Picture 1 (tube, one colour):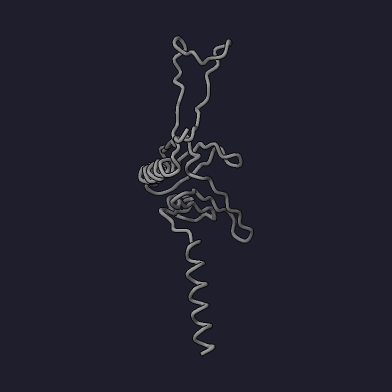
Picture 2 (tube, rainbow, N blue to C red):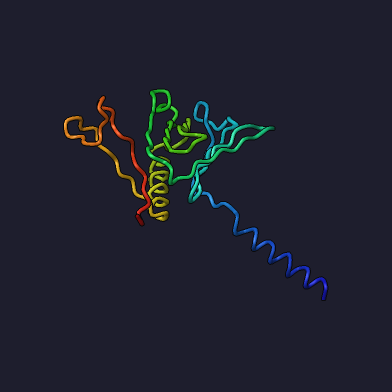
Length: 158
């Protein structure tokens, strides 16, 4: 009887812990000459982008996807030869405002996955982005010296 109660308790604890398990949408390693010979790992979950570095001493950084403002892709000649590319993620995150995802396979697909997840998270959090365009002649929000305003993030409920 006590063994059955113990097994039931273990099962309930496992179910509780499985709620906190991170389900990854994408993962890869930084590559050299097209091969994953690095201790830098990248991954994307439903709501975060992770950067993990190190072999013995590891460090994990993360960027919340709803904070991402821009994603760009760069593929040099050497990267094209080896089928890799670098994705630059610009965010409003305080610790990592600019994150480079270097030398990953299928960079266009990865950029699209990131874009899709970012948009999904912004919709889920009911965030919208209002951008002020760089039209110097028509800008009513410019400073006296002509400086442009920044992108504004607002809660859609306001």
